[in-house]
Image (cartoon, rainbow over all chains, first blue to last red; front, top):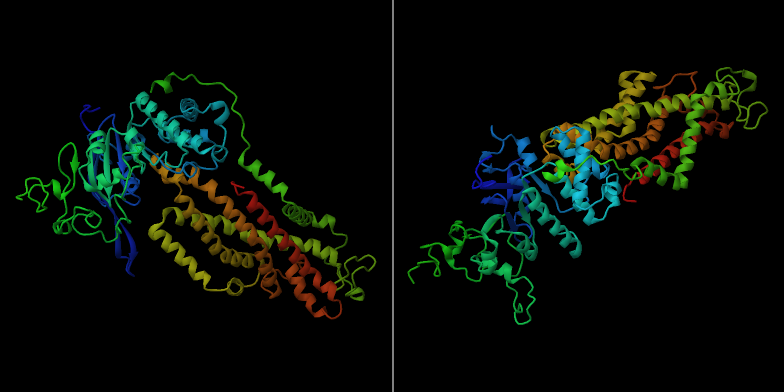
Length: 335
Length: 295
């Protein structure tokens, strides 16, 4: 094992374009730039929250970083070793990095008992069937489902919250180090969601896990995350410590997104819609900064020059934070 | 992983959940029409299996002086055919050939078609395109025409008739298998299985087969009736079973000249084909709704 300072997973230049239409020879005519050059790292033991509107590439990023979709470009390094390289074969990476999906029902094979579903993973990695089943039962107990009652049941006999607990147990059965939670609690009732979130917090502590927590629910992300990454149209807009991002967002999009959170304080009402309309189509993303079509602070330069993610610990991709970018509010601009 | 290693092997009775096939049986038994159809199918199959014990008379023995007797003649409850053979015995013995020609091609096509379709659906990409476009070529011909053309090209005879029927049924089964597999492949549990690092073969065995074979099988069951009708058609054209072997399609053919003399007797083989195919159809229909998990 490498030093604790080595990031658990580090992603550079990750990109994936999907062809939506092809000509007769199979050459793509229109391409969705679902994820277009994304860099980030996840530190050992932390929770990185990923937020953004629907279609901004959150889920694609998760699947790319787990190599469930083959990236067009980019490098994924897991604990200092290149994924799929000599030191970390893909199969071993799969054991160490697991995912829980949003749809708890679709995530479980309807023909297998939940015990068999959980035991499948460890068996793939060579654990004898008997021990795999023992592990499955122990984990069922750990996620709050009494094995004697639940082990032999089928997915359709469980409630949504119970099924998502099963999915968490299924992922934990691999004894992973990284767990990606792709909208894992978004489909649950609020009360059940809170229980599952608390369970996730406890499990993280107990098993020494690292989470990548994807959600569109900002309150939940704030509760869960140590650091937050804000995505817009396949790119990272801002990434930094959760407290800093939520207190002083640096990217206009992050600011607008946070202002869209309903406030509990009657003196602090949201009077105007902070952001309106749908994001532009990722098929032909706007040139320059992708947010300039909806940004209240956009200037002509924003349509010409693409910002670069910079700014150290609390990084932002905005021309206003790039010295000498030509934006009138740019840091150090000759006003 | 303290929790995992410290957990003692628990020797607790696991509450047994109703297994999948038991729940299918329970739902099937609730469906009166399907149960009735199943009884009819079972009766026909049993009659075919024990035909020579059940048949009251020799189905091959004819007498010129008792030709084309009507239904209800003493000793010949369903009358006699154009050569004076007992219709009841011939219909019972004929069930063997008709069922054989209805079931065998479908079974073989189910085996070959499932493998091709599941592989095409799971592998996807160019392999899928290659398989599915090849299958489409067969769709250019109406199935009756294809069966007749293949049978004609291969030459008359029972084996060739069944072979041509098998070829006719592979394309539709491939299509259904491919469609179901493509659907299942996109499910999150298959994605989760891929994320587990399991090999493609393991994923297909554990997660795909159990979820696709059912629907494909039900579809194949519905083809049995089509197969029987096509087989009868081939025999009718002289491309399948040869006289004097009793087979419903062939009997329909030879009796058609007697349609004005004894219309009811002449219609009997057709009635048998009709009842059998309807029974198979309703049976497979009931099976399909019983296999729907969410019901």
